Length: 230
Image (tube, rainbow, N blue to C red):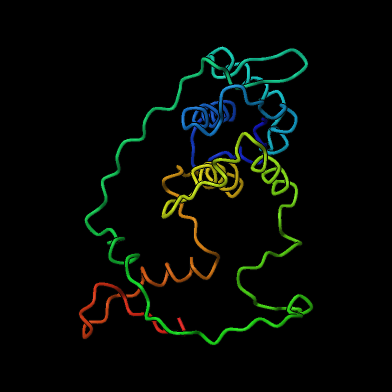
């Protein structure tokens, strides 16, 4: 598997020469486990275009990473993450700040039951702005990666994992893919345990609202009170 050039972004607040910053960026990716042993790095030309630097700067950075055993070079094939590169260590347990959100209280609250007046016209796809929840925009959907994931999931190797009932946990493979592939494209670096998969945008917005809304003082319940219009 190859490391996408879109995953490599320089920190504008980082000091040092361009060559050193590229070296640190790749070394940190290896140490964080985002770049795995054996994965092929982008070519020096593509990475130089992505970062807006000269190709020789990238080539020198790659050469230093080879000397430090973070990468190894294979003739006419490019650079790869070294199998003897330093391995990512266990993440230290985070100490929540004193003013942190009480997630058990917020997420454990169940909104009042009651049927919502929702309907979806059969011809909603012909609407210019349908505003229908839970539907993907075909013009924005990543068909290629979705097809590849489906082929991999339906194979014998990953079939058991695909059919397992995770109950109240997110699929670990999905979390890893989001943390390693989806988020870095948007300049976000996160560990799998920092990712929360929601049931669509509405569920995510509801959780945001639940965090922001304080519990109603006259109800005395443990969770926040949300109106239907929220």
